[in-house]
Image 1 (cartoon, protein in one colour):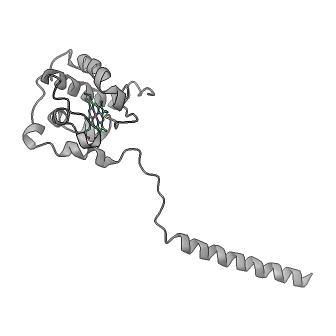
Image 2 (image 1 turned 180 degrees about the vertical axis):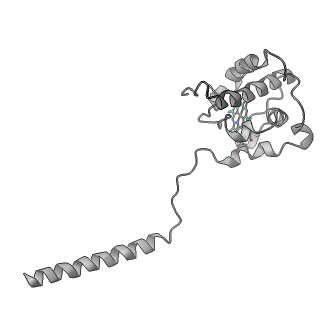
Length: 156
Ligand code: HEC
């Protein structure tokens, strides 16, 4: 009985040692962190807008109908990638993100005009300028809604 207990103690301590060894080994590996759904680098393009474009004011800033018109355009042209409520979809990132909401109207207009073609964001220069500004108003209005906690984004 005594011998069996001793053997058990030995194997238990052997087990402890190998567990410690295994842990040391695995800590050499890089941590397997969950990758964020959208890399913040996605929005880096907005930062590249030249100063002149960035500082351009939205000529429809005080147009009462611009947000509603922009919403219709968004549904027609953008929702398939960015989601019905711009919350992000399979092909395009969330436009309610701080990176977009913090950008100037001019920077968003510049993105629409130039696209990010190599990364899958089309050029929208064929839309007349007033329509692009309406889209900018609509996108910006989403940030205001989010701040007061209105309408949670519906599922795609
Ligand atoms: C075919 C899919 C697709 C469509 C349609 C599309 N987008 Fe995008 N959009 C993308 C992708 C992909 C990105 C991310 C590009 C990147 O990595 O920079 C993006 C990025 C953006 C950005 C963030 C800019 C940035 O820094 O990348 C804005 C703003 C935007 N889109 C607005 C729009 C608007 C407004 C429309 C409709 C007129 C639209 N998009 C239509 C795919 C799309």
